[in-house]
Picture 1: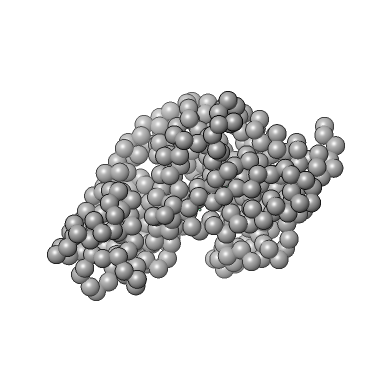
Picture 2: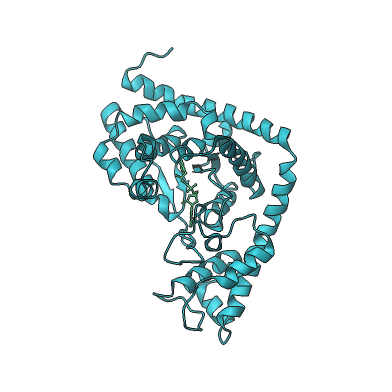
Length: 336
Ligand code: TYM
């Protein structure tokens, strides 16, 4: 996010929670696009560690995972020379804007969020206020950087709509402060499904490790998980309503190889699912290999990573303070 570039390029912002090694779903739905967008946009990407606190975390584990997540982003090709990369909690403005926005967020709107309902059901012993106001923190993340586009998977669409709503309401009440962002949801791969149950989203927190591919899985593990992937009792590799398992594998293969569904159908005409699954596993293993290698290399680069944390925090602090200062003035706070 260099100053000179800001006038010419549209701004992109997105984040990911450090709640485990990223999955193929995170990669296809988000990070792979983040990498490509670096060439044409002014990009900022961050590790959403404050969001992770909405579910009970082991403190030492969270610290480890946050470092790991940062290194994983770099390993996936997010280049700190091209993009601003930072850790959310290093930038005070996120928590500060969250409070101000919370005072303008309506209880009824937040209660309608599907993620809140899902997570409350899953963590019934810890339905905390942070879980409820999670979309407000997320809206603040985006609005602080005046982002034009937010590249996310389909599961974040409702949160993006909420961000637009709260920004519009704030602008209406206090005057123009926030740019109204658009979600950028990829056409293919916006919702990668579990390999064990293709009616469910692929998720890092799945208890069944066969349901998800971690981007650090070894090639033989990847091949085995695809071999076991749940499909159906037919034999034809075609994209069709009701063939959730095959549709999911075709989507993954299409993103990995750049082939259309028609081309994939032709390639596997007359072959069974076995050959197809082997090809999908192979394509995924090949794409993830350099990421795993680079991640291993970065594990030994502690000082380099610490330096990037500091640099990212400093730049993000500067950019976010501009918006926060405007917001504080608008709502009537005296600046220190
Ligand atoms: P998180 O950490 O759950 O996921 C990170 C990104 O990965 C996408 N994703 C998927 N895409 C396709 N198929 C899947 N199975 C799949 N699973 C996850 C998500 O849509 C997301 O884009 N609330 C956010 C983090 C966040 C954020 C933000 C994002 C916090 N503040 C501001 C954008 C802007 C989240 O929990 O993502």
